[in-house]
Length: 431
Image (cartoon, rainbow, N blue to C red; front, side, top):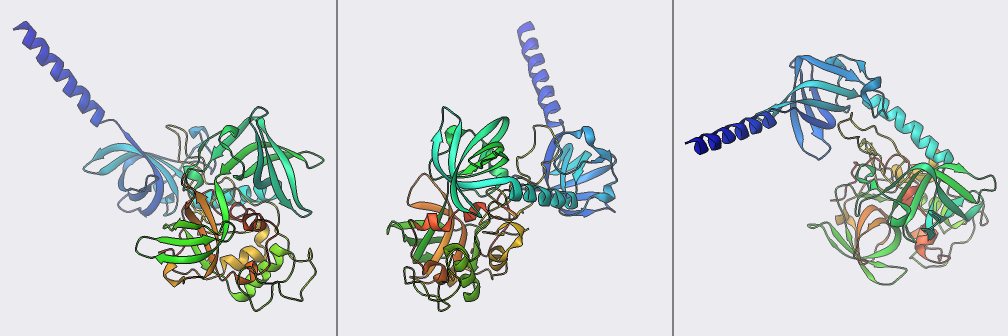
């Protein structure tokens, strides 16, 4: 009898433990979709993509922290009425029938996030370096990149400061929020790197406090076929002459340049003038225009790989407040969260503006043999990539024969963006 009584007691204790676990407060971090001050309810899109309803108790503690904070120590009391759609929040409370009854709300306003993003993007634009990796020295913990500046392309050896943050984009992702902790050992030749830190006086070396890498690639291609239903484009790489399968997702930025915009970009990239009439890839350059080197040269550096979204780069510390938006500005795809800027240059120059103002198109509008410029994230399969940006109407740009590979000619467009790869989100009329 004593044996069965002991077993019953253990079972009761186990059930009590499960009940306590079920009643443990849950945490939710995400972006506010809607806020109703009268009913004290929130609709929150969590960072995992799910949407949850949150009922905020009258006695709930509501605090606000500055964008970029990772600790609650600097939180200040706030009113529930201060919470608006687009704000980042952390909510904590018990779940009942799918609704969280929150006793804690930590707020990070979208206005503060936008200001923080602008400050960080300016910092990356003025102090950062970007380039394609030409060498990796794992013993010395350095990488050498070819970085494009006002005086052309030159090699820079990038090392790490003592407490440097090193991240890498997840395969197939253009969102900085998806980036994982990394090291120099994860970087390969031909990867793209953006770093923020201090440049040496001679400009030949750089000490990075923050470094982000990604297996991104720029391609000049022609369309072989378009599968609209499955979001797949088969293309021919103009460098290798081999077929490549391009996956087009909801975050892919698909644009078509006007002829004048493409001509101006051709001047900037090629240092000369590719005739107004456009032309097929590989055709002879057009006559006229300013001499080589007098066109608008791409400027060095806006933010790091990724997005004009509102996602917070770097995620959040375990148990901490919602992540702050920021990080290096985005590249050819990406909208930080704001929309996917794509190939944006620092300072809102003509190249970036031309792309931003170009209309979004559907992949169904692409035809066989259309020339395209792509920014893609490589996968483990060499002939399969994920599209970040697809740019049509590029005949004038590709009309001038490339000096070397097209990837080299196009530089690091996907890392020179303005608002976003590093923040995630966005959308571009891909499907």
